Image 1 (spheres, one colour):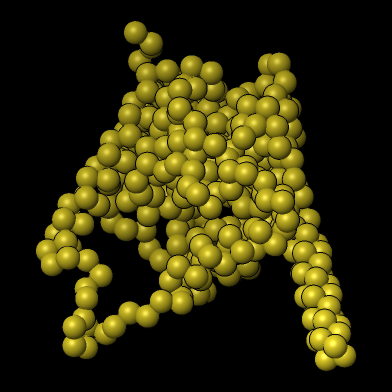
Image 2 (cartoon, helix red, strand yellow):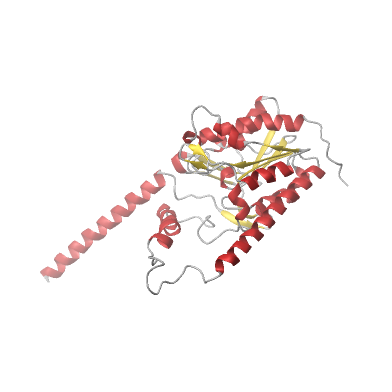
Length: 334
């Protein structure tokens, strides 16, 4: 009887210790900004989209706001303001470790406001999306915007049409901050890191894909690229038809202390579409000539830091001023 009581006492100590550890971990997760992710849904235009009317405090205390129209915008829409639509993926979105006003869409808008223009910055960037997603958003709103900024990494041309998945991005608010931690660990590590793959030379090796699948894969990737670039060309054509200024650019990839050169096909594509009503923002050259170096301008290999967003946003202020003030030579609407 005494042993049973001692065992129960020890079990109680263990349960209390586990509960205390979980409480500490939960508080720590909330302290760093987890537990209140931006929630998404699948829209009829653009696929994955953030739900309207959200404002959360995220990583490092950054404020992330989704306005009533579903855009990441630090300021609400006002009558008579220039409506500038920003298309792109997570590079345009800016991430949840940056304040709304640190993202290049708001930096550019603030620059225009300082020049006496009222601006509504419509940041429609969404993580993991393809050019076909971005194009749908523009084509749905083409008659109600005054200018478009479209910046994206070239890898987006190989992406399939993106929709909201089971875990990433979030569709439902977690009950505890630790739930978000577990979701991230499953998505980032559990699926790949805790599974062994036999080396090809080992006996009874099972290949990752069936024999001959590489050829099929290349065909699928080529078709994705074709669809994405066709969508981009459709945006260019419609922007010209509607006399909507379009600023477009391919964002570079960072490799250590340098930038990787843009793929030749990216340069050829930009050279093809730039013309009346369509201006190229040379992000590669813009970042490369900064005296502070490349590393401080990036969070990782592709996403900009606050300093990088500021550089791009300030350049966009000048580009948008020139684009909005320039007389258009585009054909009138039919």
